[in-house]
Amino acid sequence: MSATPQKNRASRRVLAAAAGLVTVGALVAAMPAGAHDRGHGHGGGHGHKPRTVDVQLLSFNDLHGNLEPPAGSAGNVSETQPDGTVKAIPAGGVEYLATSLRTARKGNPYSVTAAGGDMVGASPLLSGLFHDEPTIEALNGLDLDVTAVGNHEFDEGATELARLQNGGCHPVEGCYEKGKKFKGADFPYLAANVTKEKTGKPLLKPYTVWKKNGVKIGFIGVTLEGTPDIVTANGVKGLKFHDEVETINKYARELDRKGVKSIVALIHEGGAPASTSYNYDCDSPGAGDGISGPIVDIAKGITPKVDALVTGHTHQAYVCTVPDPSGKPRMVTSASSFGKLYTDTTLTYDRRTNDIVRTSVKSANHVVTRDQPKAPDMTRLIDRWNKLAAPIANKPQGWISADINGRGSTAPEKPLGNVIADAQLEGLAPADKGGAEVAFMNPGGIRADLVHKASGSEGDGVVTYGEAFTVQPFTNMMNVVDLTGAQLVAALQQQVSGPNEASPKILQVSKGLTYTLDLTKSGADRVVAGTIKLNGEAIDPARTYRVAMNEFLAGGGDGFPALGEGTNKLVGASDLDLFNAYLAAHSTATAPLAPPATDRITVIQ
Image (cartoon, rainbow, N blue to C red; front, side, top):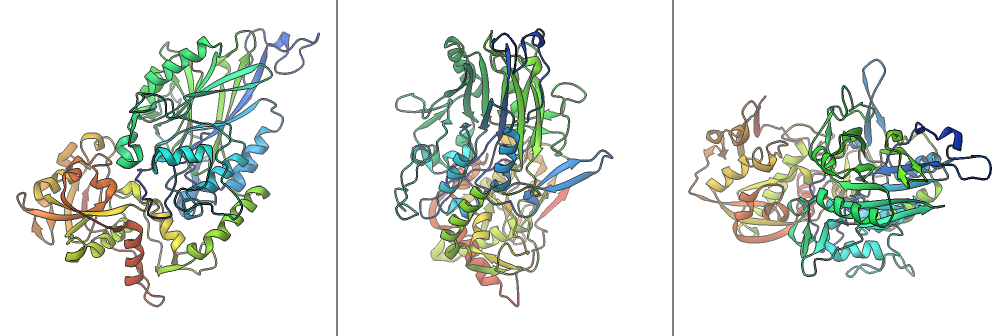
């Protein structure tokens, strides 16, 4: 699901902003009445321009710096077959995404490529080690025309986001390649609903207008209003985030006054379709019936002046129509994540009205398959940056006996979550390190699985620094704080109540903490208070406990205000350092680390 942003520390190779592009699938549009006799997008006779022209909108979202094909289950898309069975198709990687987009553009003289945010941030080491400069370079090579900011674009703060846009070498680490200065993005990042607290002015451009031969399409870009709840405080310092609908409607009016009648909104917020298959029809039985989540109400509130919505954030695949405020259907799309899909949408532009013929909008998602030729320029880019990363990336950190699933596990308690929480507890338990008695890890901060199969030449079972970084890419500093037993119980209840009730966020807990999660109940009652024990003893509401967690959780992030109430804070090593130290201490080539049992949370379904 959508990345739980956590801030990365400038301590060292931290990842950059959040990556997400939105890809919109295009099929041929039905012609509006009267189009035939005037020629449709070509010809037209008598030297007159045809009345309508088909504009191809290609989109994608939530790339998250995945330049190489994502490993394991994170690199598959689900496809429902004609017989109803579901097939997993390996997809993604910018070498293939570039080929897919370039192939799709052939024969389409009017083609624009847009993205829905989270292009960078929570990135694998190949991009994250270099503050996502490799991803921006790749997006330039993909001929991206425009993107919205996502929440992850703020992981390293507004100043770093401005550097990604405008170029210049990193303020701490400098230039990575001798004699080469980072050029920045040659496409605009749009942030219409993000303003500076001091001036009230937009942080970046709110919109841009794409033009070709008199055809004009405006793009308005926003991120989710709740960004401050899911990014560390430093990442959003000095910024205000505004309502998505109000902001888009405001700028749609402004574009309309300027004569731009064709408008696409790029929104880093999304929904959840009833099926995870990319080819699921979420308009069955009726328009938008098969999708839920925040994007539905947003779509219903956005002015009919906006002709299509490219969305993201939830890492889901959908092509739906949701009624606009006037009751007319309007296309809402999302292309999964990590460059595994792109959307191709046909927008039929009427030269007389300068508007999109909404009844003709067609859209489809397409798989970025790995059985097509690789784009040579992207292969060269990956090889170049891999060479720079290799001395750090290839260093062994430990050994595992089998896959230890994190991101790929759908269970509330994940094997890799247990390893990470145990690593944090072990590293911060000594009195001089904080005296931690229990550790909590947020599930969204686990960005991958530990895969047993070798990713390069290191050999099966070897965990490299690059692989560990891909699991824990935020380089969050660890905190140890005092919490009362009552606050600790409240935090566990906040996993399934308040903002997390509709979509629970189950914390990964260190060994010794046990409790029962009863999913047949509702709200906070789903955490059975009487079952919560630490090392076999019931939690004492009045007693003070030393609790370890990353700085994002310690700030109350992810809907855990109780964790933000901690006192007597001690700042420890980074989460990644503790994870690597644990791997080194608990595994050897002859005695690799086995996937731990998942017996801390008893789940009643």
